[in-house]
Image (cartoon, rainbow, N blue to C red; front, side, top):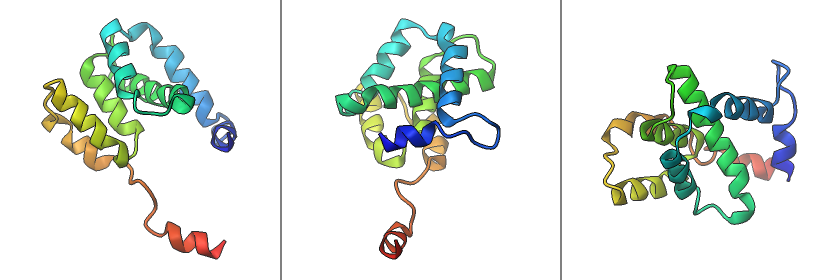
Length: 132
């Protein structure tokens, strides 16, 4: 609940994280095909049901942003995977790799993206926690 509140606080550009998420979803909703929607549903399936809609919105908005930035007309499997990697922390990539292997999808083209993704936690989070 608190994270959702933080996502609604406007940033320097006057828009909040949630505003941008909704913008990219709205701008890209016509680009989605049924197979890609099903793939996204499958990828977010391990997320607890209570948080699944929030996770799906965040990931779908990143996928939409990737598609818009690339200037493509429709969202394909590659775009879904790229957006998923960029939208999620490294701890979630183990499941993604497993799922892609099950579907016989080669992960080699995505290795640079896996390396770019954010770490699970800041390296000094314990020290900061003790100070506060």
